[in-house]
Length: 247
Image 1 (cartoon, one colour):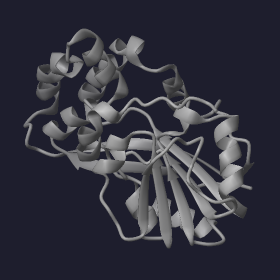
Image 2: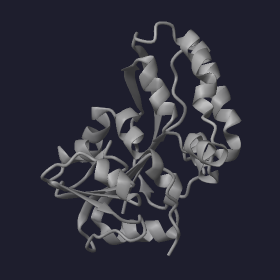
Image 3: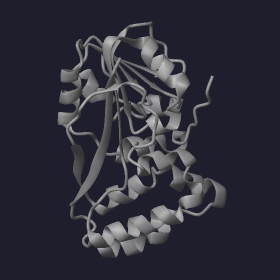
Image 4: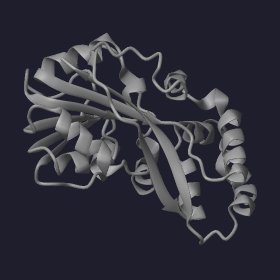
């Protein structure tokens, strides 16, 4: 069985508090693309950013993540079953799912073992959808500082991160591909929320563990000057990359 890395257990609380939500239109599109809405598998669910919107559209959601801390921090719902489990061994019956959804996680476990599970658990005609987002955009000044931080953390980014940078263009996705409209995310954050988000990066956590140094603190003052009034919310934007297939 393929090994699935866990890069986020140590920052599970921050992940829940500071990661962005996904657009409503994305989940409406996914629900409309499926032939049924009985069961969805949210694979690599983290602390549930995609799980709850799926639960509003499907009768039941099984949400799995390798990290027990992540699933423990997720918000419960009557029709959601959170399970700490590998993407390569989900607790799902053959042909039971209408949708397999993978939000900002496919690059960690894409491969033959995972795709075999997707084919196993999906009903005939079922849909698999994976999406990701790269660096945020705020303003030219803020973006330049964040871009430099990202590059300076280069040695601490796991190699799989390249797939996000490439917008999944070179990531295997062996399914009949469906056309999908473009999607983006936006939020209005204050400066404190931005700092919290940067500390959820896997490379930020890895750098702190290895060196004892907080790379976000090193750029915090410069970011604050570029932001302006720290209490003033600014629009934060991300472009979503979405790949959708049917079996």
